[in-house]
Amino acid sequence: MLDALKDELLSQVNAAADLSALDEVRVSALGKKGRITGFMKELGNLTPDERKERGQALNALKDEIAAAIDVRKADLAAAHLKARLEAERVDVTLPVRPETEGRIHPISQTMDEMIAIFAEMGFSVAEGPDIEDDFHNFTALNFPPGHPARDMHDTFYLPDSGDKKMLLRTHTSPVQVRTMLNNKPPIRIIAPGRTYRSDYDMTHTPMFHQIEGLVIDEATNMGHLKGCLVEFCRAFFDVDDLPLRFRPSFFPFTEPSAEVDIGCSRKGGELKLGNYGDWLEILGCGMVHPNVLEACGIDSTRYQGFAFGMGVERVAMLKYGIPDLRTFFEADLRWLKHYGFAALDIPNIAHGLTR
Ligand code: DAH
Image 1 (cartoon, rainbow, N blue to C red):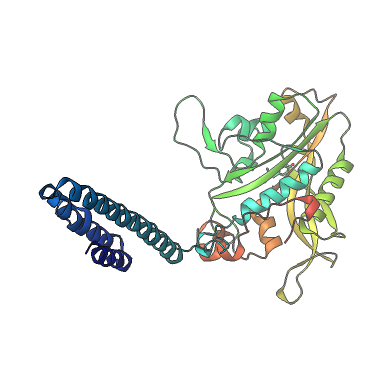
Image 2: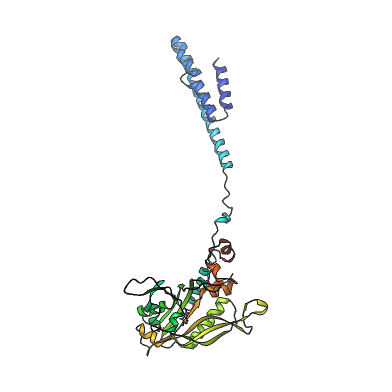
């Protein structure tokens, strides 16, 4: 009779389709009101000999069913885990979702390219504040009070706060002043950064970027200035024979001063950079004026050097064929996707600057 019960219970255990069905089988056999438990309760009615024999048989049956339940439980758990792993499978070799890809703004990229080239020549990067005073932005740069060149800068002045007239720097040249006031020659720095002028059209935005260069020591001359800028422009635009033309010009803070043009062609309405006979202006430069050296505490009878300043947007537009300056600051994601750069496209002379 116990054999029949054993077969029945074992087949129920093996037929249990999941953990909860298996538990029902366990309760019905081994629980307080289970069938094996029921037989155990009846042992008291038997003679001692019968009880011993029956008790051993029931205990053996109980152990066997409990062991069968454990085995079935382990099988079900393994099957359950396997099904979950199948259902929740993740392919870790898939690429990241394309919508999470960011782009580096062309201004950031262009500044990094310029810094990479000048760093190779031994320049280090200097910085100054966007909010400047009149002394650093104008006076120390040899713009006397009332000088007409001040008006050409369309300066944003901050509301009068009493002692000093503060303004948004109109160029990166005040970083020259700060560098010379705080360091002794020899000096060899570039200063990339934001600049501000009250102007807005196809080629002007109220905020734009410049990069300034300054070299001061005892013997640096205009030949060094030319060599440095020729080298820079050829590397930056990636045109080995790019011609440069130094045209006499005027800036209060340099003497002599020059504007630099690079060779180009405008044939068929298309701009091409190279040795084609036409010219395009890209930067201003000159030998630092003795008045500037003296205003910055440097002995102009002993030291001399050169300076230059360049618009970052302007050269970025030329290099990457971006037609309208204003689009740089419209924060249009489609524009950034088209003109922007991949995050790992880090400019580096050794590997080539351009894509
Ligand atoms: N600061 C000038 C500007 O914003 C650019 C410039 C010209 C800077 C000649 C220089 C320089 O250092 O030597 O228009």
